[in-house]
Image 1 (cartoon, rainbow, N blue to C red):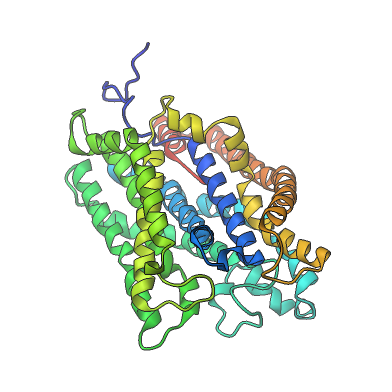
Image 2 (tube, rainbow, N blue to C red; image 1 turned 120 degrees about the vertical axis):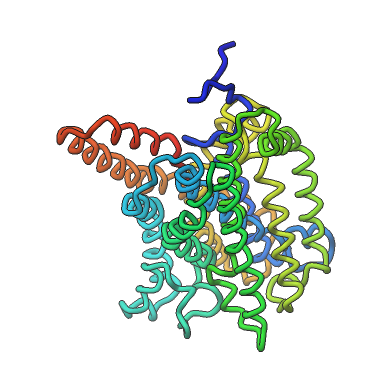
Length: 434
């Protein structure tokens, strides 16, 4: 078997993969998106509001949202982490934001165009009422015309608004973290400084929870980015640790041992995640849906969710490029397909759920869980597949064609070899949740 070596000539088979597409992440996205679908069906049918251990587990299906947030922090911050730790070419903010817009907005706008006229008329007759949703700033409207987090058919979009806010903030956060870390004398020192800065970002969430509860509880602030920054920061920290491991030359250096140990102990990590999830479903973590939490249960829930997503995703994020049982489990053909359509599953699920209840004439908090889940999952997957084929994939191809034309123009203008090498390094380390 050939030995895989990096630029320093050392074996890198036991190092986390820091470039290219991570197949196992597709499986994680699939698990999170269908878990959120189950949570919403269980909430709509009232199954998660009943007494018992299983309903309590169903009531915590919103834990899929922190999974998405951690994935975004990990995958999107990777290029900037590589820039600081290994001195690689930084990503262009303009290209990054344009790709995010093409990835998120076209399919989302279609769902908004379907849901608002169907279930929010006559408000949808006023063009100004569309703006918060088209711009994904509905979380920050001080006196919304809708009830709850979003209008019917768009109930889950509050989390997409949080994601979009993070997308816009990330280049600025990366600049601030770079300024903090650049004085480090070596890659390890720079990685440590980055982790200190990311740790400060993580502290924003508990502090925001205090601000949200004192002097009075303001639940609308829980829909703002600071409340979820802890999850994004955890993903960003994993990205830094991945590059730090590459900077160590000794196979028994601490960070390389840490990444190897987490990766090889993935079963233990998942057992820990399952235990933490069970604790989160217990009364100690606060009330269920629609029940007001106090400050301490809010912070306790936040802590439990962070431990859960870290235990669940750390072994996946620190996987090598070599075959492994975990990669086979999460990165097989079926899981990759479900991961590809996971964004559509997220987008269309409430359109299908609300439509199903209107079609059957059922009232909210009623209906059979299994029947509703099977029907809604089938139609959601169908719409998600069509959305991916007809909207999401063509939008991303447009971005790739534009990038290719720009590269050809630069090459024809006589780009020097050093610039070309920097572009190749950027492509190698860039990661995204698509």
